[in-house]
Image (cartoon, rainbow, N blue to C red; front, side, top):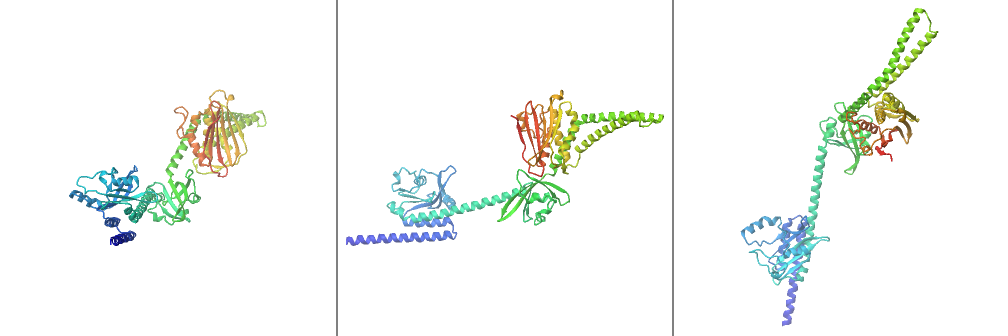
Length: 572
C-alpha cells in the first residue's frame, strides 16, 4: 500500500507540474498576444508577476529593466512590483510611483548582486547571506529570495525577483521559469526598439525643424530646382528677387531668375571654395549681384540642384570704391613725376613755337621763303614741337586708360601695351633708381579689363622702384618680361631691391598689411591686385630674397583656364 501511495504521490506531483506549465504557457501566450496588440506594458507585466507569484507560491516580487547611469553603473526600474508598503505614507508613495516605474540604485543588496554579477542569486537563508543589505524597519520579513537575470545576445536586459516561497528556491524553480524570462526579455527588447524608433523619429523631427529654421533664417538665398524649374526657395531668396512670397517663384524656369549668360552659375555644380558670380533679376527691374555655390543632391529619390547665393551687390560697390581710391592714391604718388614728364615736352614745345612764330614773322617782313636756312630751322623746330606733343598725348592717353571708370567691361588686351603705359606713368619713379629692361616674348591677348590690369602692373612697377634706393641707377635693374606658358600669359616684374622678409610673405596680400613707413601707402595695393587677378582666373606668385630683390609673376589665363591659388615663397 505504501508503494501504491508513493506512486500516487508521484502522479499527483507530475500532474501539478504539468498544470503549472500549462498555466504558465497560457499566460505567456496571452501576454505576447496583448503586447503585439499594443496593450499597456505595465499591465502586461503585472499579469506576468501575478502568474509568477501564484505558480511559485511566493509572497511578493518584482519584474524590472536593468538600465545604466552615464557612469556605467546598473540600476533597476520596475515594470511590475508587489505592494508591500507597511505605512500610509509608503502606500501613497507606491500608488504614485509604481505606475510609471520605481527605481532602485542600491547595489549592496541581494537584487543588486544579480545586476552586478549578471547571474542568478538564490538566498534561502537571507539573514546570514553576506550579499544582503538589510531591511528597513517595518519591512515584511524576507525568508527566501530568488533573483533571475535575463539577457539579450549582448547585454543584461532586466531581472525578476521573488521572495518567501515555502521551502525556498532551487534549480527546478529556475528551470521552470525560463520561458517566463524569455518572454520578459522579448517584451523589454521590443520596448527598447520602440524607444529607439521614437527617439530616432524625434531626432529626425528636431533635425528637420532645425534645418527648416536654419534655412528660413539664413541670410543667404537658397534655390532648390530640378529639370530647369524652381521647386523651393527660402525667404532670403524671395527678398533677394524682390517678391512677396515663395509661391511667386515656385515652378518658374531657373533661366528667368538671372540675366542671360549667368544661367551656368545655377545649373552647373561648383566648388564651395570657388563660388561664381551671377546677376539676378530683381522684380523692380534692377540687377542684384550674387555669389553662388551650386551642388547636386537627391530629394525624394529625384536628382535636384541646390544653389546658395549671397547678395554681394553692396560689397562689390565697396570693393570698387576701394579699387578706385587705391588707383587715385597711386596716381597721387605719381602726380609730381607725371607733371614733370608733361612739363618738359611742354616747355620745349612752347619754346619752339615761339621761335617759329618769331622766325615766320621776320621772314614775312623780309619776303624770305621756306627754302632757305631759316626755313629749315623753322621746320626742325616744328618737328620737335610735334615730338613733344606726341609725348604729352601719350602720357594723357595712359592716364585716361588707367582712370577709366567702366571696369566691368572686358576685351582682348595686349599686356605689353599696358606695361608700356604703366612705365610711362611711373618713369619718374624709375629713372633715378634703376635702369629698365624689357624682355617681351610674343604672347596672345588676354580677356581682361585694360584699366584693372593697368592698376595691377602700375602697382607692381612702383613697388619695384620703391624697393630700390635713390642714388646710382646704373647698379640696379627693373626687368619687365612676358611669356606664354601652359595656357597662361605670364608677366614678371623683377627688381634688384631690398627684398621681402620671409615672415612677411605669408601676409603680403592681406588687406592693410604694409611694410612701408606710416603715411606711405594704404596697405591695400597688393590686396586689390590679388583680387583683380584672381577675378580674372589667374594668380600672383612672389619670390624674394633679402638684399637681392623680388620677382612678382602674374599668371593670366588665355582661354578661361581655371585659376590657381597664389604661391608665396622666398628664394633659397
